Amino acid sequence: MKKKIQSTLTAGLLRTLALLPYGLVARLGETLGSLLYSLPSKRKRILHTNLRLCFPEKQPEEREALARSTFRHVIRSYFERGIQWYGSASQIRRLVQLESAIELQDSYEQPTIFMGFHFAAIEATCMYYSIMHPVASIYTPMSDTVTETISRTQRSRFGTEMISRHGSAREILRVLKSGKPIMLAADMDFGLRDSVFVPFFGIQACTLTAVSRLAQLSGARVVPFVAEVVPGYKGYKLHIFEALDNFPSGDVHADALCMNQFLEARIRLTPDQYYWVHRRFKRRPEGEPSVY
Image (cartoon, rainbow, N blue to C red; front, side, top):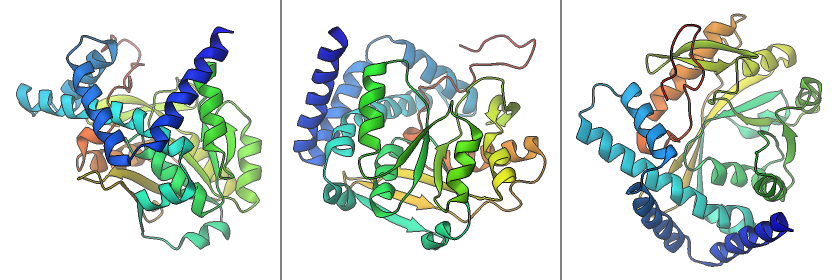
């Protein structure tokens, strides 16, 4: 009963936010982000640790400003889920600009893996793509079953085929070979299985090898995409790049490093829009102490 009530309240809040103007919702999220940043929290500690590790060249006051802005973007993105999950297709189309270096129709003529990263606008731009083109999405089940049910249902409402990360590789390969591209995010620490340690901002990071392995098995090209929050409350921009060159290379370490280097270069353009609140360096190479 408690979970049912929680689910009803969560869905009700998000539905209400979907009725409000985008600019107002964004500003409300930023305001709450500023208020929450002033309080001690686990996420705030993780954020500061990540920034200290990845940007040692910055002065403490620069990292502080970056941390504050990041927190505002993170909380704002949660508020904007209302529009993304419950807004109309026309609402979402109006909010997203598309900039693609490839002809998207080709993605239905050759196996394609769209590789994304956890920037603040990733949810909005993936929803936009699912409105415009058929796609499947690999998702990570959440520990909160209430939010899990809502997110999976709403993310698939425009026809996206949702595939659990814990599912079989055979299912993913079936989708790729059927002519439907797959979207996934590959920049989190999901454990030592099917991962290798390679540098990310100069720090050894546990990095997934699943992308290169799936590409190797399916013959798929790997196309990176990045989501950007456009300044001035003007919505979002979805950047789709050329397929990674010589990927997969046959060397999972080289492929993982290629992924991290691409992501690092994009983060440096909008560092406050990346989800630094995640424990990216959760697992350490053998013998190294925890950084958190």
